[in-house]
Image (cartoon, helix red, strand yellow):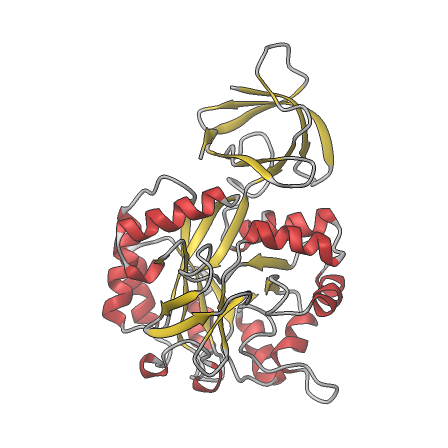
Length: 369
């Protein structure tokens, strides 16, 4: 298949004009090609979005641990321009995590591709557990992670609170197997820097559920910004205000910001009551997030493509916004050779949009989703 007369963002995230040949689900050639194909005049083609931190959407949760739930999430994401994702767990008993990673390893959903698993906990801080269930918090266990990896080798990220247990050995060992992220943590600057020095190279939803930066103590936020680690950002305009996002992107630059949805099963459904990690959350009419009964923000109900458009409206330049939604998350999970940009040899995961960035079609591995 050939897509003709394309205005697209190339692997350097600059606009380019040309044709794109797709063979066997991958981009085989880019240039001015003599053959006929599907006319893309008047459209803009972007790389498919990559969400490495998503709990659910469309009424399903990754922790439902069923093939139908994963398929439903996958279908919901594909309709919204997300072509690859890491299903994300909550703080749960080990037996439940075993079940979840096992099911995830055996299903092949029809929509967005599950390229990995993100373990958000259970080795986190009670003081910053948010919507996570404190009943199941525990100290980090290398043996537990090795057992889960033996069931499913596609575990890509695990979030820990470095101060919640003696975490240096854990980080040193596990960083060789997957990315170790700092999050849901009450760590101070020194504890955060120690974890980063040991090999924790990623921050889970920066600003949310962690110690803030003040003028006398950098906390997790200030220490992360001052280092070279990648940082997740929920860009729904409610988890982080636009002014803070603008300042954060100025610090992180083009390569360190990673946009995530952190969405839950209520995403795409509107107001209602939705279970998350064994707790009930509530989405009120007109509210852009899911909240616990006491009003605490529990999760988002957005998607990464909407966040990409949000960022442009907030004043972030298109290249930086697009990188943060595609190649940067792909790089965190080691999938940047396959996904995350429009380049020869990569999966033909493409969003076809109109000039107002409304989605017209989504291609996953060269097929219309």
